[in-house]
Image 1 (cartoon, helix red, strand yellow):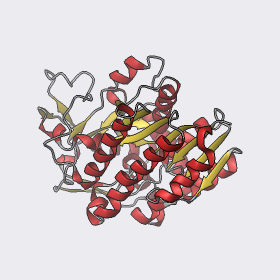
Image 2 (image 1 turned 135 degrees about the vertical axis):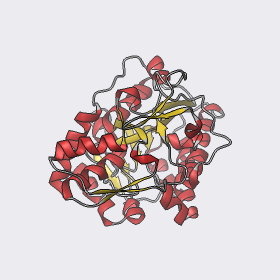
Image 3 (image 1 turned 180 degrees about the vertical axis):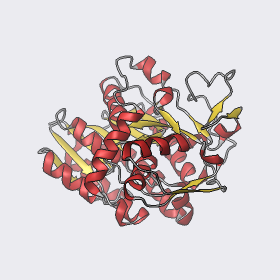
Image 4 (image 1 turned 90 degrees about the vertical axis):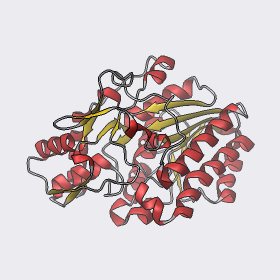
Length: 353
């Protein structure tokens, strides 16, 4: 039997991974205790997505386990042992602002939870492929010190800079920077995951995501940029832009395209490899540009306001250079651009609001 374990299975990336890999494995074990609802409230609950997986995937088994509990995590790995071929770790506390409210909770989920899964893998299925969903926030606010230029609808990097053509690569320093507590806990997990690959020779890959998006995101004000933006466009709920004149730029990668990266990595893993994984120059937008697109798709004006105070550690401009991954896995390519992603989000969101 060949088994895949997916943490955060009710979330955006976890549910996409469960669906993607369901016909490639005998059993998909999803781990998710709906802690996103604790983080962000009832609207962020992932229980609806879990029910969808249980209904649609005949080989899906759901376990409501807290990854902070090593004994409970290890029980799963002990039971299935060498049959476990893949672990996709997508569970996390994902918000800058929320992390500052409960630092111990944030760190125990993001850092300790990751360590629990890595060590359980090493003890019970060391030959399995372990994929860690990290974040571009490991670079802290270092991207804000790049030579940025304010244009009509966005910030952009100076055309003479090496990052202009493709975006920020993995050589950017993760040191001497303001991460936010969330960024710090994810950096700890990121480095630990790399070490299990490099030190123990395990098949561990780290993927530093940009804005991860798609139709199955339970977006809220504190997390889930495009999903929450489209939700506000549909419902007329107020949306607040924080700082940088609304011109801050994000690259956005569809959950399918990220999980397809995982699939290519799984087939030919590189131990301790670390990749930037975002929408790159292929799929990116500023806040103002995203609002305009949402208004066009929803067919009405949005109810938004502007606050001049930016979120601490927030990026002014971030576009991922994915050329390192493309060089290692040249058969991978994007399927969804920004417009098609937003149309998908709109279609699914209208069914839920």
